[in-house]
Image (cartoon, rainbow, N blue to C red; front, side, top):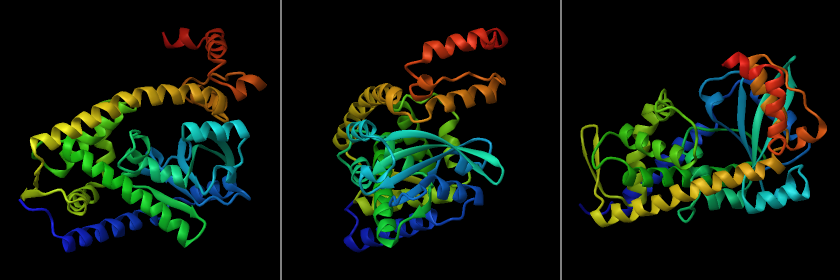
Length: 322
């Protein structure tokens, strides 16, 4: 089958941009926008993106997930060493607790520059972390202006393009759009060493089936991937050599994902702002046990992990669960 003609590719790219822009501006719960307004304070990031499980299933008592996109890492309130660590291995992650309308709202906040965002959603990246998140529905809950919105939308379009391209290679030779997306998410979870049950990829599609079904063929059209369609079944026309080359490329990304995620855990021992409070909240929520925190363990939760585990043992956490 011949390659899609340029006019078809341009039309598909336009549909993708329109669909993703529509995703970004969908409303969110008022407590989310209030939290973000207090989080950024006087800072002027390019934008704040809301994503993750709390977007799919709103829960004020759970943990919200945000990415703060800045023009330069110095635009965010963090120390010199934290910024240097973020330059070397983005993103840095912080934990925040902010009162909103009489209740404490909690969130993990990742910090990324727009340059890093572009690089980590581009074809050359070996890191799957960012584009795998932003091919999913997200909301732009705060933005500095139209130019910043366009720059962020451009990165999300790149992320979705990456995802669809890899889905063609990692999915079945022929199948429904859902089967290609499920195969992709199973691979991205594996590359990130995320502890999830086998049903987790399917939850990402629930409620958004029409979005994913429409996006995949348009991604392939825009990317120049030839395919045939038989009812709901799609058949990307990849040669055996193309499929083998891409799967070898994924093998490298999968192995590097292990290294990157272990490295981020190590970096988090020194840069996860508020990490001890996050650990303490998780333990309190699941067991009811209050974990005492000192100034050093507050700043360096992973370094103090043996002490924190000992404190839990003294509090009877392991006896109760055994």
